[in-house]
Length: 222
Image (cartoon, rainbow, N blue to C red; front, side, top):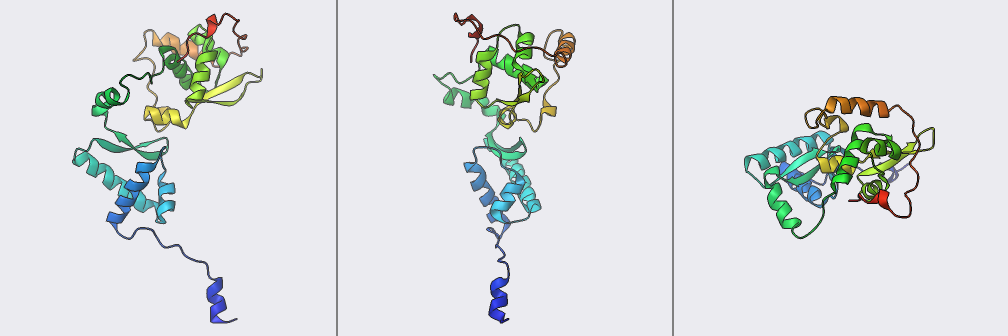
């Protein structure tokens, strides 16, 4: 076997795409600026062909630099990855600029339904209806369309179960569902409500009937 043949059979080692810390930070900024969802350190490291711990260190430097220099944006870790966000103190400014003349917010009914799903998941539509006291078919469709909830199997009765998505975590700025706040500080008689939710989570129920033709039961859409 010739030296040339041996060389041909050796695996090619991919060279890193960055050589210096400055290049690393610049490359990370470029990648994260175009990201439409949080990107994990592992994926960033693979894109740059560098060790993950080097990416972790570089991201930490960027986070500190943005904070020290008072930038209007920050790098935030949510849903298992990193993404740029405008700083919280500019929320009113951004909302006024982006949403002026638009209706982009969820309705109160949709927010309440989303909260029930978030705290009871996986949960069926009928159980959500029982908690809210109204039919939630239309609202659940809205939440599905906006990718805030998704189907996740069925109960023994055949009822479809729903849970929140990673996009929900991203929009809420949460790493995981464990970071959801306790109900008690925010709702009146929350202790009783939590007990009721806990009971509903273990009591089997049947999916609600299809709304009648008048549509009275599906009027609380976002």
